[in-house]
Amino acid sequence: MNSKTLNRFVMLALLLVCFATVSWADAGGRLSVRSFQLRYKEPEKVAAAVKSLMSNEGSLSIQAGARSLVITDHVENLKNIAGAIEKFDVPARAFRLELKLIFAGRAPTAGKVPEDLKEIAAKLSGVLRFNTFEEVGGISVIGKEGDPIVARIDGNYRAEMKFGEYDPQSDSVRVSAFQLSRIVTSGSDSGQVEPLLTTNLNLRLGQTAVVGATRQPESSRALMLVLTAQRSE
Amino acid sequence: MTCERFLELVSAGPVAHSVEFLDHLRQCPNCLDRAVHADPDLLFRAIGGADLVPPGGVDAFVGEVMQQVHVRQTEQQVISRRRLAAPIRWSIAAVLAMAVGGTAVLYRPAAVSTNAPLSVARLQQPATMRPVVENYANTDATIVQLPAGNDLQVVMIFDDKLPADL
Image (cartoon, rainbow over all chains, first blue to last red; front, side, top):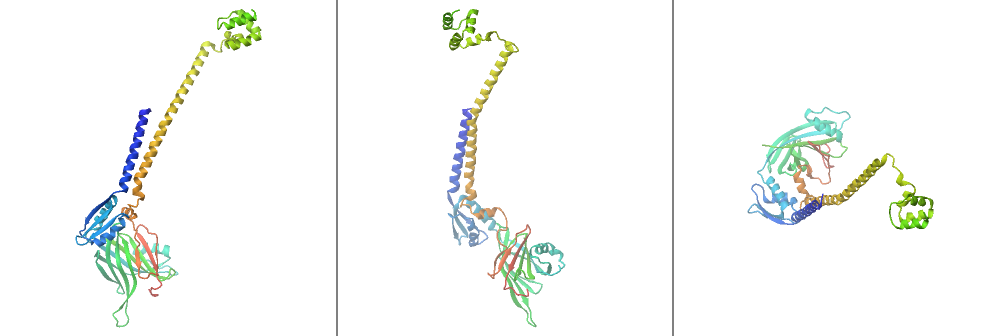
């Protein structure tokens, strides 16, 4: 090691410092403007979807007539926004939703569990201490984003919903205005619709979601909705 | 030999001394004292050192001395080399520190900058960030979402307004 080597080290250090400083200044600074032409989705919906990706310095303008968005933001953010829009602005996708209606209960002795509910029953009995499971019925529906769905379950229940937007960030589809109603018949009456649950759901594709409803945590009976959403080709 | 003559010979400088000179040196403490101040080698000669032979012979003694000299010189060289290496180590440490610091500065904007909101991280890792039950008609109801498994998510709604005969 001599002074020549020492000088090389010092030069290398200076180069590193200069590189870091230049990169820091570049990453922090410049704002850029970019226009995004939309093909399938409404500009307002796309704007709502990308708003959370924008920085505090960013701004967005909706050109409804031209079906485009003009976004001003940092270069790095614009790259992320462009990627999100590319994933979001696609033709309406179709999904298959499978829904099962189950009554879960707590009894002194455990009841027989249907074969297709064993996995779910194991989870529910472990956490929520339900030990009897009775399947009321189920449906399997296919719909595209934006499509309304109405289906009857076992004649006594009715499910209404609307497939919402697919969210690529969480790989989930929104099921909006979901309403489960009970059809109450009395005598010659054709049946009155009694709403039980009204909610908006986010269902991750491929994951089974169990939504249970009961009056109190210690109630001996609960209504369980077993929902699975899949992409439909 | 008289003391005066002895002191004259000592003052004359280092010369080959006679037997008489050495006999006087051994017998006269005053002259020995003065002679040692003038030439310390005289003391060595006074005690008969010039006639002594080191154990193992002169050649072995010289060899050992030279070996010790060589060892000392080698030690000095190693120590001086180590002393030279220290600044280089410091410069390496400085370079590494600057490289680490520069890297930290370089990557900080991506990690904590306000320019990269939380949603960006969400975009990169597909996970169920949105709650299964987004909202519910009865705002007084309690909604509990249990920790998700890989393929099963359980949510319970506790609602007093549900019919008693569900």
